[in-house]
Image 1: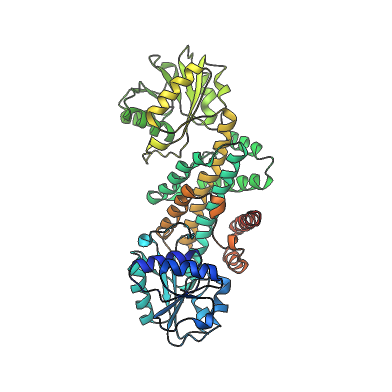
Image 2: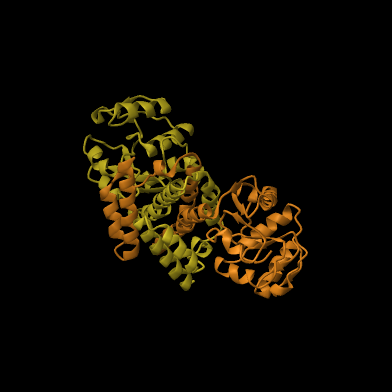
Length: 252
Length: 252
């Protein structure tokens, strides 16, 4: 396991739990290498040239910007090498490896929160049918939701996730900030946030939009804009989103 | 129950299930009045002057913009009248009623999806201690999560919800749109959306932000912006949100 961040940690734990032998952890920093190695009960190194060759697969789970630097630092011989990044094409591996692919678990990972991998979509791609079979078997051992996508599709999936996950989380943070300003705890928003997410399992989000903009309730929107006078950036977001929702509902 | 929309429907069902007698449904349109009345097993009317006086409480669950029009159309005598709106102050009732308050279930409601009221925060406010007690008892009969807030606090709570629920849902719709463009089903986003919401139960959203902007990964952000060339509005949202996330993480 090359990397010891959020994804490396959760993927490593899931693989170990399914009986895969984690051979070694590499990380740039001793602290994080040691922490993950202890969770995975395997040795670690911080020296990329000392990575064990005794493995069936190298999983590169570092930030996108570090993938090429890791790739260039050793000879990978015939061993299968995968990266785990949404927006980095598989072709980045071709210059450095003979057998390669992508193993992209499509989920949000943090070190502290354990992820149940069972339903996590794992998007795989490989440079040969044989390597794809190997990745498919590995992916199916941790998830029932294995998908084949090429690099262009995977990048679009990642882009959609930035909106539907990363930016969503930022909206949660804005909600928290607005409540804290008036001394109200974030607690009160939690049932609403969970229900809003739960709704999309059954209904398309475009058709289940609620709120003042979906009703074109200009009076409530004006009240909200007035409350945001001291937050010009939020006021701007409020206008943009409300306009988009009003336009979408006209089309429906 | 005055109104027969999303909130009136779900609140009416929850009250009926807890053994409260729903006396009558009013709605402007016969179709929606009839539909809700049949769910609540009570009569209905579309004539506001024909609303039964034989009730302990009138619940006005119409859109904010229609509240005052409903209030002006009859004499409410001494009976307790509440509205259910987040951003309409309680004071709107003072001109028309002697006993009044607000009963605001803080959740997103759609007619088709049943809501488990048990943990839904119900924000109450009343013009007297006695009326507050009545509303507290009613609220506690359907939810364990009853909160006292004044109209200014309630409006801020509603504003926070527009960001953390309504705009969040719009981001889900954007994610869906981006996937459909490349022929990919929305299904793949569902586990991610559910996990992103589930995370905030344990972690503050500001501290659990993930994604390219939280890592200040300019290369991935540039790739995504290039993919959005044909969507100038989405490109704009992408830039704004990424900048805000980068700034927030500098402060942390």
